[in-house]
Amino acid sequence: MATRTRRSQRRTEALSRERIVETAVEVLDASGEGGLTFRVLTERLATGPGAIYWHVANKGELLDAATDAVVAAALAIEPAEDTDGPQDGVRAVALGLFDAIEEHPWLATQLATQLARSPWQTVTPRIFESVGRQVQALGVAQGSWFTATSALVHYILGAAGQNAANTASGRDLGPDADRGEFLDGVSRAWEGLDPDEFPFTRAVADQLRDHDDREQFLAGITLILAGITEGITAGRPLSA
Amino acid sequence: MATRTRRSQRRTEALSRERIVETAVEVLDASGEGGLTFRVLTERLATGPGAIYWHVANKGELLDAATDAVVAAALAIEPAEDTDGPQDGVRAVALGLFDAIEEHPWLATQLATQLARSPWQTVTPRIFESVGRQVQALGVAQGSWFTATSALVHYILGAAGQNAANTASGRDLGPDADRGEFLDGVSRAWEGLDPDEFPFTRAVADQLRDHDDREQFLAGITLILAGITEGITAGRPLSA
DNA sequence: ACCTGAACACCGTTCAAGT
DNA sequence: ACCTGAACACCGTTCAAGT
Image 1 (tube, rainbow over the protein chains, first blue to last red):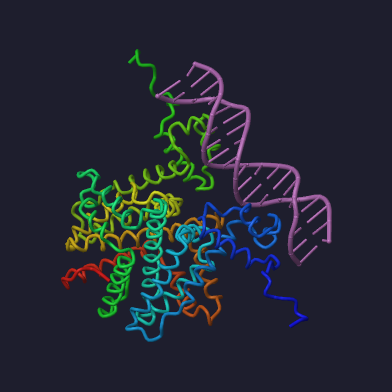
Image 2 (image 1 turned 45 degrees about the horizontal axis):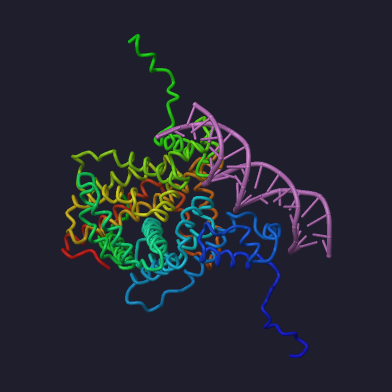
């Protein structure tokens, strides 16, 4: 113990790709995508930009790596083996991603843009795999695996993105404005829309006010699951 | 006719917010989001940056306006009154957005980030309204309007975003690489994934290769519609 | 092999000055 | 009211030089 000089000392360890990505995630969580600059990064890591570029090709790759790290962590939370039914497996994976995006609002935008940049690279297969296994467990015919999984993944990404928007905006309104007040404001804005142009939107303004993001998200999953199982019992392939 | 000096002369008309937004859309279509800079804009409009800032608050607002203009145009294509069934109304609106995103790939990212910036402002109500009216026509109980419409909108945005990614990436591969070759490459990449970590993804690699984006998109819509109508016939509210 | 840090090209935005 | 264009602060990225 005397020979090993205290390892407990705050590890100002060498720069590494891992440490850079880790720091990037911290910065993104704290100040969003706009807050992630090489200047901030070099300060927090106590280096120069060149050092970072030694480990990472460019900012895009850094964002990709940050996204992948967070998504991987979110999906690593395996759903309990003995859930009520196979449908709960899908719900668990979906909620895992939902929560990750709520925790890291930058993820939503990032998933959209990353998929647009280096699409089917790492993140998409990861999500596809997790959702797809649950779809398999559902008893979907093999020929419909891709269709059913795609539908779920698209919905999850779309819904999560939209929801991250809500969460992030709620924050911007300042410390006093909570989620309820935020929705209240949007709901009132909807009620103030042109009656001729937006009759439907006005009609559901109160449903918007009262809705719960998480519940709503799950309701959508349930809807898709109903469509999938309906196809299973009918014994026909899931196609247009 | 003699008094009016030829109006047909290329209208180098005065700068206007409308003309700026129009030009922005052209630039975005031609060279993507990265290609839209104030320098390019000032050159194409033959002015200085200050002139643009007189009509537009900042780049974000310009992107919002461009997004709104394109979405509005896409949704303005009213579905034919006498379609086969009420479900086709939903399909028509969904395809309108799908096509718009395919035509303007930057729309996908933009929709995601715009919703994250100024969420329920103009674009969301527009989409919500169009989809919602078709949901009404479907015979969904009023209490489930918001849920059903949300599910569809989330799916549409998620799917369209993903698909824009494909389209855009296909382009990047150069003039010779067409969509088929692109999917072929991704499919092979999926087949090369770790068998222990990605069994499902590997199993659907061939379904990815053979799939058609548009068909797949519609299959998802059908799935959700099945879930919705299943709820209608069962006579219970659409909730989690 | 890994890091330093000055330098570069470019970007969004501002603003005093013009008409 | 609308436009000009130089100027500013900041950003991602490079690279010769160090260890």
